[in-house]
Image (cartoon, rainbow, N blue to C red):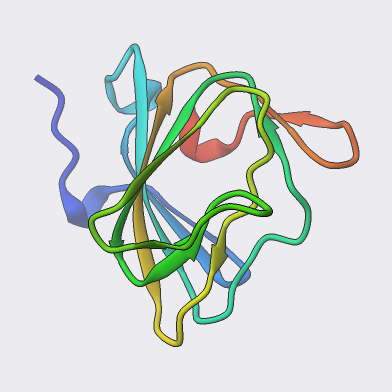
Length: 123
């Protein structure tokens, strides 16, 4: 059974956001990718993107919005963004927000400019 210790979990820092990976193919999970997403106060990604798989966002703390015109989500709430729907994560609160994210391994993202990517936290 693969185990990812908190101290050893891969972390990826982007401006205003931190991804801490708990499950991915590189960590022994053949079918699922999961990570904790921490968003600084006021943080949002600039342009919507899409995935080719459903993505689940579970709010651990703070207040967020996960689609461009989506509902406000608070701690304990979860949202499923269906494959192909736009994703634009935004911290609406005045404190840091934390989410747990899950998606099927092997997903591909399409950015607003049309480029496709598979982020390092999903490999």
